[in-house]
Length: 71
Image 1 (spheres, rainbow, N blue to C red):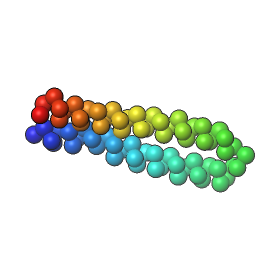
Image 2: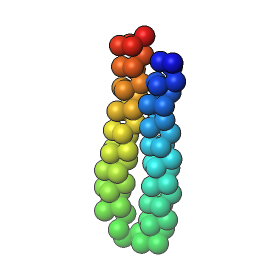
Image 3: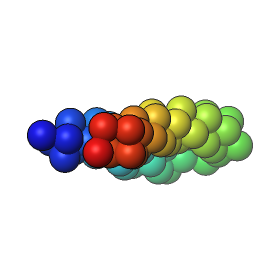
Image 4: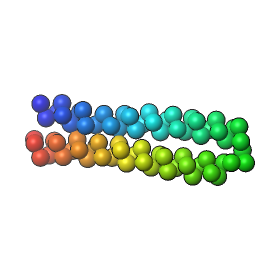
């Protein structure tokens, strides 16, 4: 039962991975359309990627806490 809860908490990592992939693809398209805006696009991409990764890390930490504290 604990493993099921940890698995559900770890699903946040999947969402973050998909989100970062979509963001990277859109940033690539944006740079291809407007090369002069590359620095602004890169800054926004890094900020968005960091926020998405933070969500994944929170999910991972919750999964580990569920296993350690309830296991």
